[in-house]
Amino acid sequence: DTRGGRLKAARPASVVFEVDVPEVLDGKERLLHRAPLTLAEKYAGVKCDLAVPRRRKRGWLALLEQAGFDRTKKTVWVLEGLLYYLAPSVVQDVLIGTFSVSAPGSRLVASVVNHSSLTRATKRGATGAKASWASWSDEPERDFLKTGWRTKTVAQPGDGVANFGRWRGEPPVPRETSQLETGGGCDPVPRTFYVMCQVNEGGERGAHWDSDR
Image (cartoon, rainbow, N blue to C red; front, top):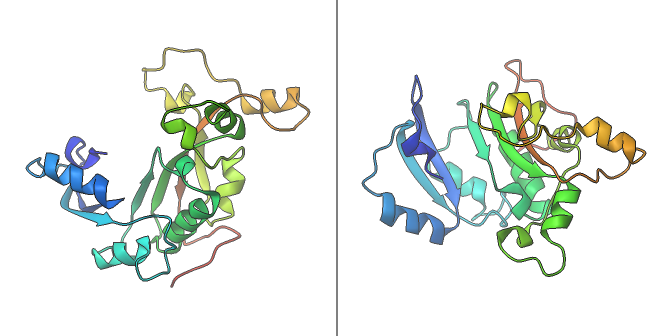
């Protein structure tokens, strides 16, 4: 991702952290080492494997804090195009870990796919990046809450809040309609969800979480 050099904010963030495997960040450093930073005052690349649990010495959270991450500052976590490539246990570790070190007012945005979308992408003979998808969520509101994150918005591409005048297809089938047609069972419609969560300023947390504090 190149948001740090493409986007501008009315008030720049103090630092943009980018967490990815070494080969990806090494390649980006070679290509973008002279590119201006527009979204924040500083940039820090954190080379790690998210599959290493956050509490281990070389876990992603330990390395993130070594790079200067400050738990007391509001953070925006961007997990777009990521979670469905991770095993369910890794997804849980990432969501619980990000929540446990997020100051009040912090936000998380993520994209997830439902079970029908995962099944279609990984069917026998499938090729390409989607064939490696490994996790799904039919009810992001419930699944994110289990890790502590309370959802503020769950939208599909083409919904009113996820349109931006660029959607050219048919509006997505409402989730309630699709599930009613199947008697409340597994949603047969392949879906992608954009999820936005927030830690309330008052510090209210979800029902199920563990903490590194």
